[in-house]
Amino acid sequence: MDRIRIVGGESLNGVIPISGAKNAALPLMIASLLTDDTLTLENVPHLADVEQLIRILGNHGVDYSVNGRRQAQDRGYSRTIHFTARDIVDTTAPYELVSKMRASFWVIGPLIARMGEARVSLPGGCAIGTRPVDLFIDGLKALGVEIDIDGGYVNARAPKGIQGGSYEFPKVSVGATHVLMMAATLANGTVEIRNAAREPEVENLAKCLNAMGARISGAGSETIIVEGVGSLSGARHRVLPDRIETGTYAMAVAMAGGDVMLEDTSASLLESALDTLRAAGAEINPTNSGIHVRRNGSGLEPVDVSTDPFPGFPTDLQAQFMALMTRAKGTSHITETIFENRFMHVQELARLGADIALSGQTATVRGVEQLKGAQVMATDLRASVSLVIAALAAEGETVVNRVYHLDRGFERLEEKLTRCGATVERLSS
Ligand code: EPZ
Image (cartoon, rainbow, N blue to C red; front, side):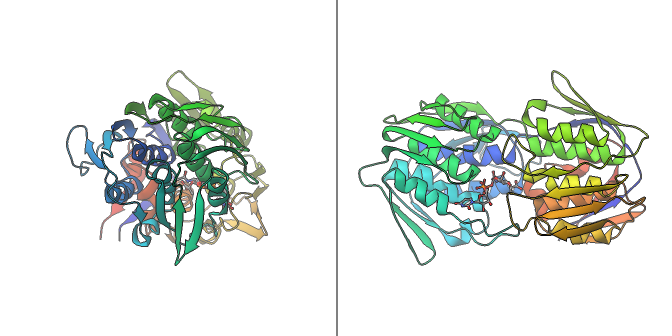
């Protein structure tokens, strides 16, 4: 298993190109199941999760080619990939595949809409909480889908197709919003989705679906209206920049100090996180092509944050911000409201000398003078990168074990940091 070795103490200076968003690419790839035409996606990041979803989609009959070639082995930055689901050969998504990546459950939306049936394994447990699928089921039922759960599988049938209707989510869910929106594109009638997730990835998916011929309005707001159409066609669409990668590197600069231009991204995707970073003492200046981040000399101010659905502070940046606060000149409180068990990084940060006390959903972080390098373990994607951020400012050497978590969501992390002057290397085993 690969490990990453980091020697702390260098500031970061230079340019970091931001990749296409993993959490937009995944639902966009799944949307290719809705048409027998080719969906071309530009700016798809080269990540383990993307490769895994390519395999899962292949099982349903989706063919793909990368920039014209049918291979995905090159380690290039974000690529253009063509997806074609000429025939759906299988409407079952088996446990062996779905259990590896929760987002693959989302194939249920396009499969039920296009084929009138889907049998999808319940996703397995997950390191950040229980993550049930009740909202998907209730939402699909509101659109006339018959559902039963049997032997760990969700069996969905819509013999007369998806029906027009209205559903209000009792709780905001990104994935369930993606699924209802995709299913609704082929509905008989109009679908109203209320209390929808407003994340930029939802808006990006709606834009792509509309380019494919769907009639969606309101994506990015609380109410999405989808007028069903008979069929969708192919399209060409660009994956939006990864706001979580953007925020992660902004926090890395705030932690290590330095002057970095984050390129090919947009401040509008993460205003709340950037405001929080400004309050902590980083200089953040949006430009036409990205965000300029600087922090020189002075220490970090403690800032309290609470995670929230977009446009609030993202849960996917909570661990990284906690890493930053371990060095603040005082005490901060970090509250997680989205997932009940997303604090796996706390004990690993403590191995580096952080002073964090957990009480329910709130972590109290007392800033320390200095962190010290140690052996630590990556537990999930965002927790792993929080350890990298902490290590950049720790004295001496840190080795992060189990970095396959990082490879799920960060394209060429070592290279991006090394080019800015950090000492980061992958130890292959
Ligand atoms: C998406 O997950 C992201 N994943 C997550 O990013 C992100 O943390 C999350 O949204 C919140 O922003 C992708 O986009 C691939 P949810 P998702 O449904 O859609 C509860 C990362 O690190 N819920 O919005 O699975 C759920 O348990 C990942 O990149 C139900 O109760 O999240 C959670 O508490 C991790 N019932 C809350 O809603 C349901 O049926 C929000 O989850 C569905 C969800």
